[in-house]
Image 1 (spheres, rainbow, N blue to C red):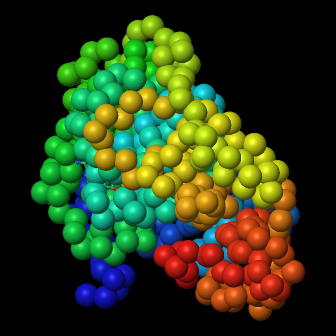
Image 2: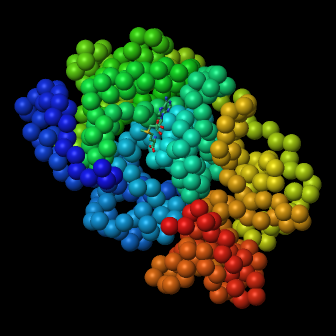
Length: 462
Ligand code: SAM
């Protein structure tokens, strides 16, 4: 079957929903499920504000997403995923409903945050923006095949405080214990809320699948609970309507972990409260939220915030990163490069060499033991004999104005597609130069004798 060829919405699913929603709601719900899916654009506030993006947006934007101040509803069918502003990491394309999770978890700058099921990185990039580069975000993905996509999205986003791991929840809990201020579990689910855009989810759906997902979710959430520090928060979210996978999973957690309690979430326009009566769960579960496509401009979603009772500890002291500093030969090569090329100073106590590579680590850096780390921080570049060569993620870390030498490309010119396809450009620039699109960094070039050699990575070419 071709990837997204039409598949009818499962009849049994619709019957269940009719039963849950009743006469007053079901007809509108059923009609919405046959309508076109909604999409949104979340601006990367690490690089520019939502309003700055709106002023330069090449795409038709609708109103702001009510529950996410950095995002707009998308109108029209431009293809923003292929635009050079996407390449520059200026935004992430996401279902507006999915933007609720990071906002409701509400990470505070400086905290340590875990996104336990992070690929491809929608919520992780959102959490990183809310952290404003302070504290630590561990973005984890268990599946080897999915973690590369997560790492690439994280690199494009350009945050200096993310570590990407490729681990099971169990191994993370064994290593860290109850260390995180906030944990997000955006659980693998039956995907009923994605039926409008994902024909595969329709084709795979069955009652047995819902039951299987619920068992897996309970297991994941029980391990996640062990990673939350006393006084910390845990947000559980899914993109399904099935109460077995939503309120039912939380009910079981509250039975097994009595030190967790449900936090009443804010009801933004179009949100409805959790539905414990659908599955005979405790009344406090009305504190969760459900997002339905007939009540707002977005897909189906569920979120529940839990708080672990206990004392809030001072996180800074326990987790400050202590560095032994860069070895002399590395420090002088890096400093020479940075002085010539950059307008920003990266604190040297956060620089670390692994092999020949130089990384910029998050300001908080716990002991990762033997965990599989895919992205320990921002790869700044590599030491080659007697020189330092910058890497693409360093260009993505830079904001407008952070580079001393730039070669700017216009959106409408022929140079931009040529650069993104790996071609050499004509330029008077000398040495390492940041290539920008309307001032926003998109990669490196090296100016030599009137030419700008192309250092845009092959793996990133569209
Ligand atoms: N948070 C992501 C985002 O916003 O882009 C989407 C996450 S997706 C809903 C769920 C993820 O859970 C998938 O990437 C999947 O590979 C992962 N997963 C599957 N089984 C898992 C398990 N047993 N433990 C942890 N994660 C699992």
